[in-house]
Length: 117
Length: 117
DNA sequence: ATAATATGACACCAATAGGTTTCGTGTCAA
DNA sequence: TTGACACGAAACCTATTGGTGTCATATTAT
Image (tube, rainbow over all chains, first blue to last red; front, side):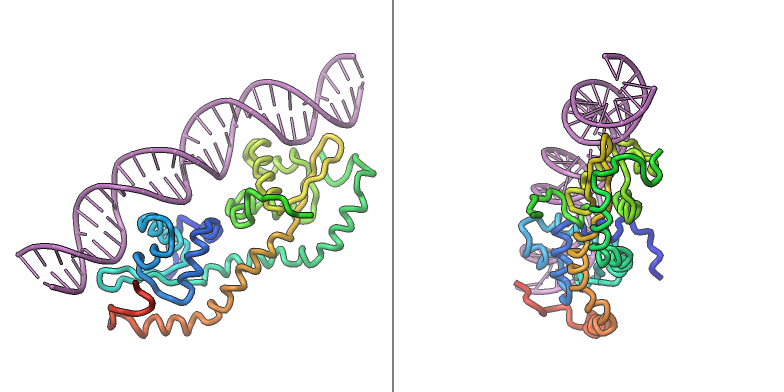
């Protein structure tokens, strides 16, 4: 049901600060484009394009009501981000021990280790 | 101690698939650029530029050893991402109820709601 | 019917991103 | 000391991005 070939992925979608701001704005309120763009110093068209990127990533849903198109957040795709993040969580938990290893070998053996060619 | 004016933020840094791959590669191994770039179909210089973006975002640390520069993951900045994400977690937990609201008002009152101007 | 509104589609533009190759420099090995 | 190696810096190219303005269309209000 969700097999649309998405051109923009979540990572790309949230890379832009304006788009992150949009997500926050639409977090629990459905809004038409004109109202949304009133919150930004750029043109309605620009905001509209940002919304499309978000929609392609599945992060917002659109719904036509009369002559307006209302947008609202769909947080579901953020779960992919969470999954991705969770992979690294154990590493910052271990960060102290990792740092220890790092310092231990310092610049005292500048030569061969690991699989250097 | 970490007050470098970072030109690239974490969100931007992880937007690129190559860079995400780099993070994974460096997750617990320190590697010099040449070895790293051996894993990618692009030039060493290109990989090097990706590494710099990651470094500017604080996601990798460099350390000069002789004539080589070794890179390793620093997962710490990912915590910002986690904080950002956690804000939305409650929304996908509530997704069902949100969907209910969504359906309830459907197209039956296409007029005034929220803070329209 | 006519005018106003909301929006998407389009054409366009400047800046950035991601890639290339070339070159200079520091470090290691013979 | 001479050559090979590892790397960053620089100049350059193309595609993408983020923005603009204009226009066509659908919908609503008069």
